[in-house]
Image (cartoon, rainbow, N blue to C red):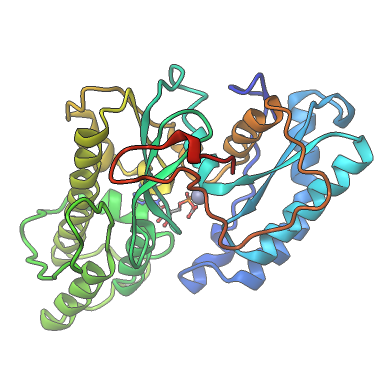
Length: 341
Ligand code: KG4
Ligand code: ZN
């Protein structure tokens, strides 16, 4: 439940980490089943903690995509039913747009143009945001998302799921120059700010085989070789993110930089960004609003509801929903070519 677009009255997170951890990643079937079990009590608790009745809300926002179709459908069906019962407008929100809005609660208002780097388990995308609600993709990953690479490397090393927080913690004790990871990046034309993480993941796998590193036994402390390896891996990920973020800032001179999505929790990434002078403030959310949460979806939905949008009961889930609605010709942004998400 949020108020006035930027005040959180309640934010309930029903984490499924314990369900998926034994499998080292999200199991779609288990995810939708658990969504189904939890959605009604979570919404009831959100209203209860906010101290409002359903009839008092102005509108309902729900994630439309991208994501796992089963989980999206559970959310959309439930949201539509309460919108119908309470006779409220409803808007479908892009999950990535939600991450972009996750910064509104704890930072000064975003000034445009903005550059947004969204790094999560499913996406690694760099956007130019010329004005609120308009997005041009400057670069995206060609293979794995950064968070996915963290999770896969952690799985390979027996470090558990999700990998990001574990590697973040271990890397603090590691020497990032100790493990030499050799990999090549796919060829990318020069103005292109695309990312690639699968070569790095394969380099970790090769290193593990060459150096005969065994996966860490659950409950045991990893040895220094593993700690240095994850520090080296993380260092490469952060360099790759920062190089492209710097290039985007040089080209587009944003007035705000937005850093969001689960990987933006990473303490080394945050301190690297904090020590850099981008010529514009960097907005990022506190960790609890950086990983997936409903408040960010409500914030993105609020902006749509405030513009008078109501998607009614006809819209449905979109597993591969796109967000970019501004066509970049070279690096000129023709705003006339814009349409809303
Ligand atoms: O945004 P998010 O909660 O879900 C998606 O939309 O994917 O991001 C989850 C991802 C996972 O891959 C997780 O390993 C990563 O964010 N993550 C981190 C950290 N905390 C979560 N990656 C690096 N460092 C962290 N501290
Ligand atoms: Zn997310």
